Length: 139
Image (cartoon, rainbow, N blue to C red; front, side, top):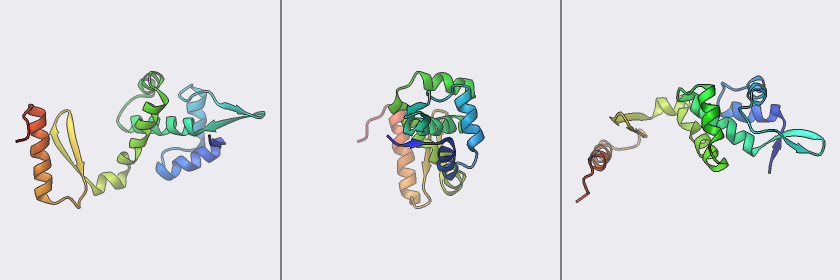
C-alpha cells in the first residue's frame, strides 16, 4: 500500500488532469467524497484507494455527473469498481478527444477510434456493432 500526503496526491493527479489541485483534494476529503484517511504511525495519510477514488470522481464529473450523484454512486461500489471507473479518466483528456474520432452508433453506443484505423476497418466495425445491436448473428 502506497501512502501519500495531500500534496503528493495532488501532484500525481495534476499530471493526469490539470483541473485538480491540493485545495480540491482537501475539499473532497472534507465533504466526505473520499474514504476516511488511513492512520500510519501518528499521521493521517492518503493511499492508493484515495488516488483511485479521486480518478473516479474526475472521470464522472467530466461525464456531467454532479458531486452529489458521484458521491452516491461511488458509495455503492466496490474498490475494484471505483478503480475501473478511474481508469477511464484518460479517455476524457483533451488530447485524446482531439486525436480520436467518436462515432455515434445510436444514443446508447459510441465508438472512439484512433486515426490509425483504416476507413475500411472503421466501416466494418460500425457494421458489426450495428448488427450486434439489432441482434443479428455474424454469418
